[in-house]
Image (cartoon, rainbow over all chains, first blue to last red; front, side, top):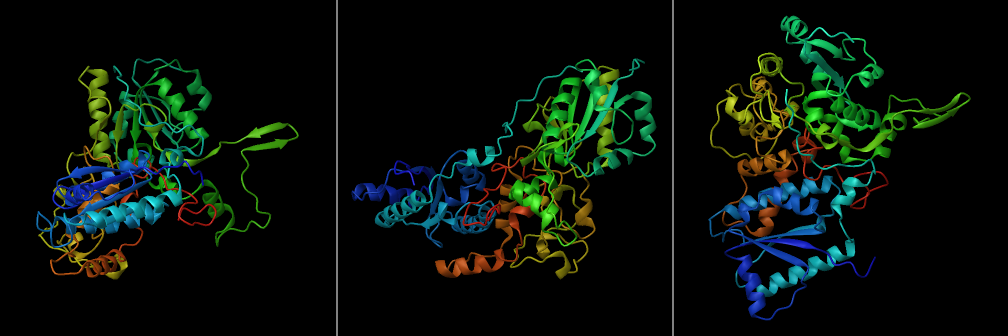
Length: 157
Length: 345
C-alpha cells in the first residue's frame, strides 16, 4: 500500500447532536485525523442516499453518517428513518462491491466529542488500510471510452 | 435513395430484445399512417437496408431515428455514432437506450464473468473445448474482426447526444403514437417540438398517482416474494409487503402491472428531476418499513432492521432493474470486497 495515500472521507453530521459532538471534540482539544470533511445537515433524516452515492461516485474513499442516538432525535423520529435507509443502502453498496468499512453510521450525542473523534480515527485507519476507492476509475476501467452525460444538442426539425 | 418529399424514418436496435420493435407494430392500423407520412430509410427489423446504405446518406438525412437498445459492444457504439451523424432527431427509444435496462444489469459483474456464464458455466451449455468468441480471428483469407464486447453497458446518451427519450420496457403503443403525432406535426406543419433532452411519451408523476389500487398509511414488517403471497385485489401492493417500485417510477404506462397483482418493475425510469431511481426507491421503502420505536436499544433496532431487510432479495438488482447504466454509480466494482476473480461481491 502506498504510504502517501490519505483517504478522503465525507462526513454528514446533524445540526443538533453530531455536529455539536464534533464541536465538543474541538473544544476539548480531542484530536482526530483531518481526512474527514464534515457537512452539516439539519438532521440525519435529511440525508438523501443520493448524497452518499454522489460522494462515492465523485471520488470519496468513504462516507460517515452521524446523527443523534435513536430516541433522541430533535425531530422526534427522523433518525429512525436514517437508520432504515442506511440499513438498506449498506446492502445495495455491498452488491456494488463497496467494502462495508467504507460507509459507516455512528450515533453521537452533543456530549460525545471523545467518542466521535475515536470513531473517526478508527474509520480513517480502516479506509486507509483498504486503499483508494477511486470510483471514476472503476467506471472507466474497461477503457472503452466512457463518456459522462453529454449536453443534448439543439436540433431544428 | 428515393426522394419523394416525405420525412425520412429510421429505427435501429442495438443491445435489445426486439420488444421495442414489436411495440411499434402494436400501434395497430396507425402503422399505415406512419407508412403514409414517412419514408422508411432504415429499419433492420422490418425493411431490408444495409449499414452501407446508411453510410451513403448525407448527414442529417434521416428526419426521425428511433434508437432502441443499450450500448453493449463496439458495433452498437459505431451505429449510435453513425445514426447520430445521419439523423436530425435521434430518440433514445425504450428503457435500454434511455437508461441501460436489463442488459445493464450485467454492470453488476464483469465482462469475463458474463462470458463464462453464457459460454462455459451454464447447465444448458456443452462446450468441452471451452470455445469463446474472439474479437479478432486469423483465417487463411485474412483477419476477421467481430464487435468487441464491452465491460460496462452504457445508455445511448453516454456515447452520443440524444434529442429525446421515450421510456418504457417496451414503451406503451398509445404513448408511441402520441409522440409520433407530435413529431409529425413538427415536421409537416412546423409545430413546436418539445425542448431537446426531454423525456416524451410519459407522465411527470409517480406510477402510484395513476394506480387505482387503494392506498392507506400503513407500515409493513416483512416483504413477500411474488410466489409467497396471493395479493388482495384493490389494495396497494407495497402495503401488502409486495415489492413495487411504483413510488420511484415515472407514470405513463397506466399502472398496468400493479393492477394485475404484480408490483411495478420500474421500467419507465426515475421520476422527473430524480437522478437515481434506486436511491429514490430506497428512500420510499424506508418510509413504509415499520421499524423504529422509541425504547428499542441500538442493538435491538439493528436486529429488527436486519430481519426485515433480509426479506428483500437482491435490493440493488430490484431497484436498478432498468436504470443501472444511468445510476450514479453506473456499475459495480469488480474484484472488490473479497470477491473471487471476476465476481462483483
